[in-house]
Amino acid sequence: MNAPVRWRPLAQSDLDVACTMMEASIALWRDDWFGSSDAPGVRVTAGRIVCKTEPWSDPQLSRLPDSDRVWWSVAKEASRALAGMALGLTQDEAATVSGATCPPFTMLGERIIHELSLALASVQHRIPQAIESTSEARLNGVLVQLTTQQGQALCSVLYATDLIIRKSTVARSKTAFQRSLTSRRHALAATKVQLHARLGRAALAIRDLLELAPGDVIRLDRKVDEGVELFVQGDGSLAPSVVATGRLGQTQDRFSVQLDSLAAHYSK
Image 1 (spheres, rainbow, N blue to C red):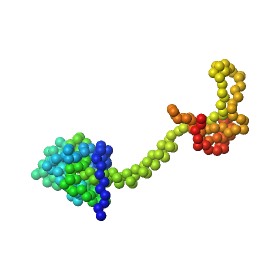
Image 2: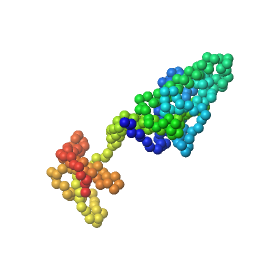
Image 3: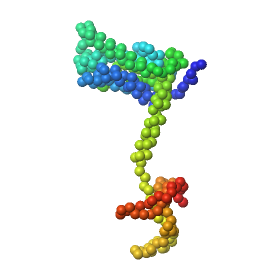
Image 4: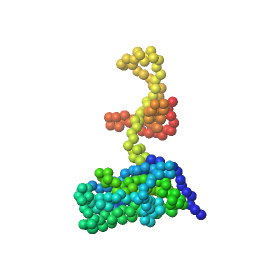
C-alpha cells in the first residue's frame, strides 16, 4: 500500500527551508575545503519557486547522483573558482591558471565539485521514496544558488516540491513543538506584571470629591478583618483580574499581604 502523498502549494517560506537545507548539507564540505582558508567563502542564496507556469530551463541541468529529487547546474568557471578559493588565490589569480599547464589545479577543482555533489545529494537520506515521477518532480520545486562572497555563481540547485514539504514536515515534528515550549517559558519568565492591592472602595459624590481637604477621613467599604484583594490591572477593555486575597501585614518597613486564597474571577 502506497504512503499518502502530501502536497500543498509552495510559499516564500519554502525558500528559507531550501536554503537551510543546503546550508546543513554543505556545512562539512565547506569547513573541509574553506574553513581554514583566508580566501572568501561560499554563500547560499535564495532563488525562486519553480513551477510548470514558471519553469527553470538550463541546458546543463542534471540529476545529482543517488538522488531523484535534487537537480543541479554547475557554472562553467565553478571548478576554477573553487580550486582557487581552496588554495587561497584571488579571483584574478585563479583566472590566470591554465588547466593545460597545471593539471593538478584542474583535478583539485573537479574533486571539490564531486564532493559538493555528494554533499548536496545527502539531503535525501532517510527521506522516503516519493510517488511523483522524476519527470514531473523537476518541473516543480525551489531553486537555490551557491555563489562566492563576491556574487559569482558556482551552481544552481533545484529541490523537488515533495522533498521540501517532507523536510519541512520532519523539521516541524521534531523541533517546532519543543522550541515553542522553550520560547513560551522564556516569554513567561521575562514578562512582568504589576500586582495591585485593593484595600477597599469609597463611594463619594462629585461635590464631596471636589471638597476634599487634608485631614479628612474617608471610610472604606471593607471591614478591618476582611481580606485584601490582589489584582492585575486590565489593559484597554479588559477588566481588572483578581488573582488572590490576603491579610494586610508588615514586612520590615513595607506593607505586605499574606495570601489566604487564590481567586479566578474578574473584579466588577
